[in-house]
Length: 297
Image (cartoon, rainbow, N blue to C red; front, side, top):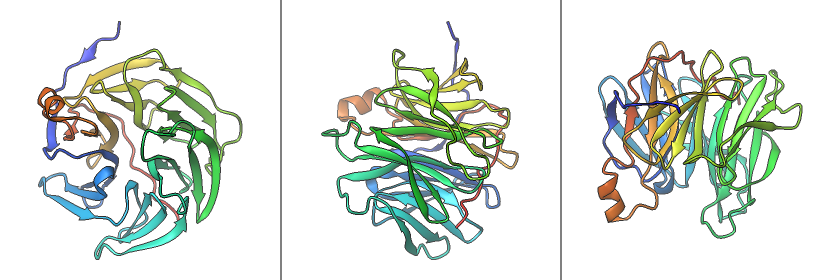
């Protein structure tokens, strides 16, 4: 039986985010960014000072990616927006499912080629099964690569860009697929990487380190799991919030790990049982992380 490592980290943000997701770290400014999806907020946290700034958005967003020192890309419920960091101005560049008011974006990451994978899903539980998709977007060209996805999550890539990972959390079978390292497009059918369908908690957001190990946040059980490239569970780390959502590497050497969480669906009684729901953490371990590639426009 795998030993669960106790939490030895610290709180980076003690705000109860409704659904903290999609964290990204900008090493040039020592700033972490993530989305509070259900409240349509972009969160900015300067790591050293702890200064937290909230930017209101006109739509639900789930992914923030660096474009350059002045701009970011946001994946939202109606497509991709280019955001000017200094002014906050948003420009819709790539409409995606913009005719579907019942849908929103969810998990995503930038491939080493500069292309983006991100998923969509129903906003409500009703009719959610199979309603979403995972898209590949490269310089505005949109390709639906995996249809009939209920809750897209776990998207990340091997360091050399030859392997992609994703999961439908409703099914909880983590998938592995060969990918063209130059384009980020799949080159073969996906295969099961790790069947988690009989294990507690949902496979949520992930990130891949420089050794090819996948770090996955586990929804409903307050944990981060580390998988080897062959799908073996090699470590489990405890997080003080049950609804753990997504990790990202932070620090000047990408050797620390930030983990977001949420409080979605928790009533007053459940919040008493999970008083730090929605907090954001430094996991308190040393990792061989890597900085996120920039999205190429």
